[in-house]
Image (cartoon, rainbow, N blue to C red; front, top):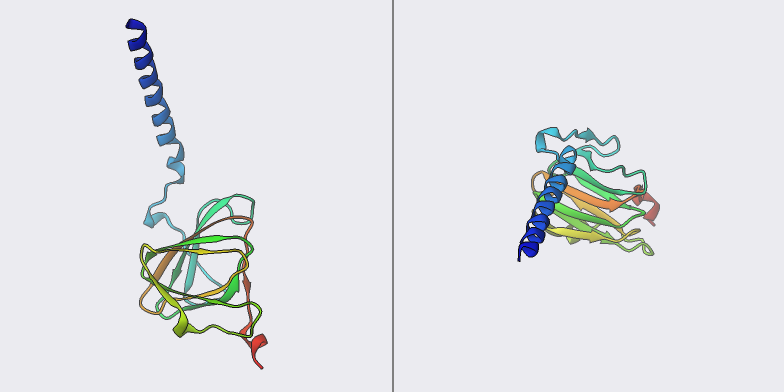
Length: 158
C-alpha cells in the first residue's frame, strides 16, 4: 500500500512540475493589445498589419494581425500557403473569384463574417476582403514561407 501511495505522490509532484514548466515557457510569446506594433501597408491605404507569432518568411507557423479601416477593400489576391482567418472584431466581408475566368471582385457578393468567425482559405485561392461596416481586426494563421500576389483587375478587363 505504501508503494502505491508513494507512486501516486511521485506522479502528482512530477505533473505539478511539468505543468509549471509548460505554463512558464510561452510567457515571452504573450502579447496584449498595447504591445502590438502595427505597421502601415505601403500598397493599400487603410490597412495595418503586425506579426504576432513566428516569421512568415521561413518554414514555420506564423500568426499575422490585420486591421482595416471602415470602407477599405483589400483587393483580389492569393497566397502560396493555406490560411486560417479569425475575425477578432468588426465584420469581414469575404469573397472568392475563379482563377480561370475574367470575374473580378464583386463586393456585393462578398459574405459577411462577424467577430468570432473562422474562415479557411486554401493556398492559391483568389479572394478579397472588405471592411464595409466599421473597423475590421482579424488574425491570419498559416505555415510559411508565405507571400501575397495581387491580381491586377485591369488585366481582366475586355
